[in-house]
Image 1 (tube, rainbow, N blue to C red):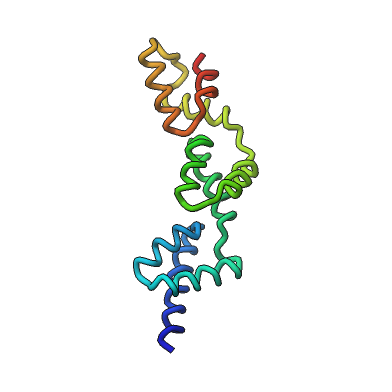
Image 2 (image 1 turned 90 degrees about the vertical axis):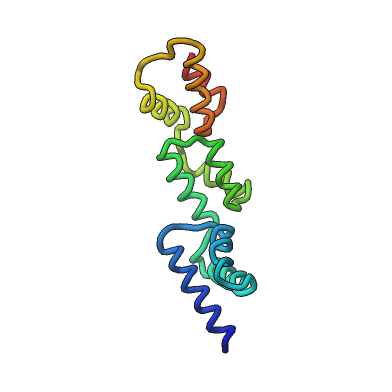
Amino acid sequence: MKDKTGLVEVRVAAMDLLARREHSQRELRTKLERRFPPLQVDETLQTLAAEGLQSDSRFAEAFVRQRSQRGYGPLRIRQELRQRGISEELAAVAMDGAEVDWFARLAYVHERKYGDIPAADLKEKARRTRFLLYRGFSGDQIRELLD
């Protein structure tokens, strides 16, 4: 009886988290294991995934869409997906499905931060390059934009 009550509590806590936004299974596990025993968390997560209430692929799609709209590049988004427990295959599917023009996104981020003013010298160009690399854009794209 006690075990069944615990599972209900874990499910309610998980559903509360999922009601706010999509979560990867690793994120949910980390948050739930702070409050509940790992075995109950595992059983609940398996049930939620089987019912389609928690989906790593749905999380990855939403995450790619949200992060790309905020001006992050494909390299950084892939890294953040890996940190959240998303496999390379799911990350690749989500990135391909997003249909983002990464060069246009790069140009937008650059213009928003620096305006239309070109880099005055190599030091300024290097500073801009570091910023755009940090945002997750490739060196080739950045060189093409800044040259």
